[in-house]
Structures are given as C-alpha cells and as structure tokens.
Length: 224
Image (cartoon, rainbow, N blue to C red):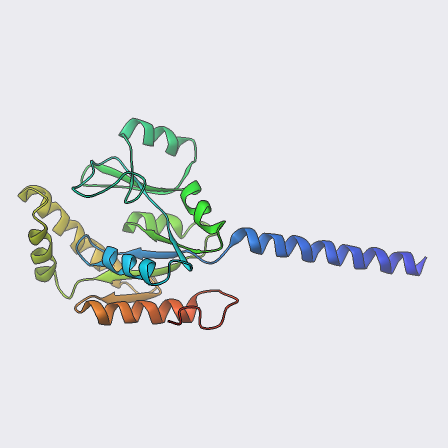
C-alpha cells in the first residue's frame, strides 16, 4: 500500500513539474516595452536592436487607424486599419492595449505578441503611455523602458525636421510629449529612463539594460 502511495505521489510531482515547464515554455521570454514621445528616437533604437540581434528579438507590429506615412508598409511598420474594424476587435477582447493619439487609434493585439513569443524570441513593443498603463495590468511582466529627449526644445527641432505634420498637429504632439515626459520620470513607472542626447550612448544603455535583465538560458545573450 505504501509503495502505491509513494508511486502516486511521484507521478503527481512529475505531472506538476511537466505542467510548470509547459507554462514556462508557453509564456516565453519577458516582453520589452519601449515608450517615449514621438521624436525621442525610440524607433531608431528599436530598429538597431532588431538589426543587431535578429535571432533574439521580434517586433510586435501594432495596429493603427492613421494613414501610412511615406515609406511605411502595411504589416511591417503597422497593421493599418479603419476605426470601425478596430473598435469591433477591441470589443471582442483581441487587444492587450489601445490608445488614442491625435485622433487616431493605436493598439497591440494579443496575436501580434503571441506570434513573436512562440518563436522563442523576446517580443519588443513600441507603445504609448496609456498602453503602458494597460499592459501593467496583464501577466506579461514586461521590461519597461522610457526614452526621452534631452529637452522639449530639442524634441520640437526633431519633429519639425520631419516635415510630416501641420502646425496644429505638431503643437498637439508637443503638448502630449510634455505630459508623457512627466509620467515617464515618475519613480516606479519604468525600469529605466534613457535620455537620448547621443544615439550611440543611448543604444549602449539600452543594450546593457536588456542584457542584464533579459530572461534567457544563454549566457551573454547579447554578446557580439
């Protein structure tokens, strides 16, 4: 009788371990969230990380209801959609986070994140402040990085150099940026704040942070 009981306990322990292992595999590496005002340089840092380590990172392509800018491709830079379709998808619970910016909707779908995580790569998300607040309520446990310009004057210069928006839209972006910077600098909102006054220095800070915090079974995960 004792042997049967011990055998049963052993099988139960093995079953629990297998379930735990399966859960860990399904969960995948912690996502990496990059957030910052438009013009802070976060997209440039993101692209550099993806280019340098294509086998380590995958980008979660967001949805948006705004029109594509010159050079942007559907399914690569964004999934471009319309407001009615996106609202319907949100109501169905298909999105992890959504935000409205300058009258346009942005959001990260559950499928976009899972598609990356299923490959074993670290999923990178480029999202707004409202999205950060929402993703904190999930079980994704992301690494949160806030990228900011050295000052608002420098940010305005960068945005004007793009020459992609009318004056009213530019002013709205700057007003939003000021609020984002206040939130980004509040203690506890992000794991690290990177001031992008020099691209190489900012990238080095990002790379070091990710290397130190990324969950991986491989030593020196970001070694060149």
